[in-house]
Image (cartoon, rainbow over all chains, first blue to last red):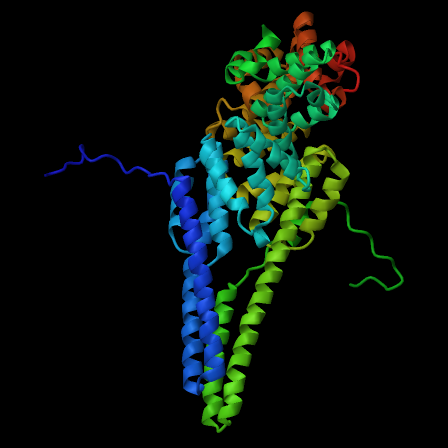
Length: 276
Length: 297
C-alpha cells in the first residue's frame, strides 16, 4: 500500500511503562554484575595460570572491553543526568525520549541505571501518574543505592506524596515516618510539610496540623505559589477545626490573594467549608 | 614594586566582584579516560621494550598485573576524589540557596565568597553561585556591583529563558535603585523584546519605574490589568506589586485604594522588607501602618 506524507502520522513518543523500566533495571543490574564477575575471573585465571602471552592478551582484551563498555555507558549517564533539567523546564516529552534511551540502553554503571529510574519516577510524579511514580520509587528504594543514597530521600518523598494521592494512607505513613529519621534539605522539608499536611487532613489530625502555625506559615512562604496557597488553606482548615478563628480568617485572606479560591476548592474539595 | 615585610597587607575587600569573577573561572579539564588509555598503551609498550632488552620472563609476568592494577587503582581513587569534590560543591551551593531563601544574608555572603575565591569544579556551580551573589549584593544595597555580575552573566552565559528573564528583571530593578533611568528603560525594552512582554518580572519592573518617575496613573493601570499574572507567577512576592500599587494610589490621592493595597501587601510581607526593597514607598508605609496579624506572626 502506498503511503503519502498526509496519511503518515507524526512520530510519537511511546512512553516507557513503570513495569518495563523496572524489568530493564533488574536485567541490566544482573548483566552488569555478571560481566564484572566474568572480567574478574578472566583476570585471576590469567594471573594465576597463564603464560606471558595469555596474560598480555587477557589484560589487553579486558582493558579494551572495559573502556568500550564504559564509553558506551557514559552516554546513558549523560542522558539520565540531562533529563532532570528537562523535567524542571517542563519539557516532558523531551525528557521522556531521553529517559527511554537511557533505560533501554545497557549501562555498565549501576548508578546511571538507578538515576534513570529515579528521574522517570520524578517525571511520572510531575505528570500526576502517581501509580507509576509509586511503583518506580518503591523499586528504587528496594536497591542498595551506595553513592546515590541521597536519592532515598527524594524517592521516599515521591512515594509518600504519590501514596497520599492514591489514598494508600498506610504506605504514606510509613514513608513519612522514615523521612523523619533522615536529615532533610530545606527543599525536601518543604515537600514533606506539603505531603504531611495533605496526609493529616485525610485522617483528620487537626490538632497536630495546627501545632506550630507560625513556623509552618513561614515555610509555606518559601513554596511555589500553588503549593503555598494549598498549604495555607489546609492550615486555615486546621485552625477552623481547632477553634482558632483569628488564624483561620487571616490565612483565608492570604490564600485569596495568592490563588483563585474556586480553582483551589475544585482541586481540593475538602477546603470548600472554608469559603462556604 | 613589592610591599615591605613590615608593612601589614590590606585585607581584601568583602565580596569584591572583579576579584570573584576573575578567580572563579574554571580551569580546563582533560577527561581521565584518555589518561587511562594512554597509561594502558604505555604499559604494553614498556613491557614489550623490557622483554626485548632481556628482562627475565618471571619478572615480566610479575610486573604486568602489578602495573595494570596500579593503573586501574589510581583511576578509581582519582574518580572517587573527583566525585567527592563535586558533591562537596553541590552541598555548598545547596547551603547558599537555603541561606538566601531563609534571608540569612551574612551566612550567604560568606559562603558565596568562599566558593568563588577559587575555581569551582564546574561551570554550572559557578553560574549558580554568581546568581546567588547578585541576590546577596542587592540585599546589601550594592546595586552597582550586582549590575556588574548580571551583565557578566548575560553576556557570557547561555541560560534557560526563565533564569535569563529573572536575571534581566533583577538587573532592571538594580538600575532603577541606582537611578540609571536610561539604562533601566533600555533593559525593560530588552526584556519585552526577549518575549516576556506580559510576564510578571517585566510588569513589576515597569510598575516600579512608573512609581519612581512620578507616573502613578500608568502604574495603577498596569497593576490592575496584570494582577492575575502577578499573583500566579510571583507567589508571596506579589506583596511587592501591592506595595508599589499602594504608593501609586497614595500619589493619586485615592486613599481607600491605597490603604487596601497596603493592607494586602503587609499581609503577605513584613513592612521592613518592603521598604528596604523600595525606599520610595516609605511615606505610604508610615501613613497606613501594617495590617493586623495573629499573635506569633
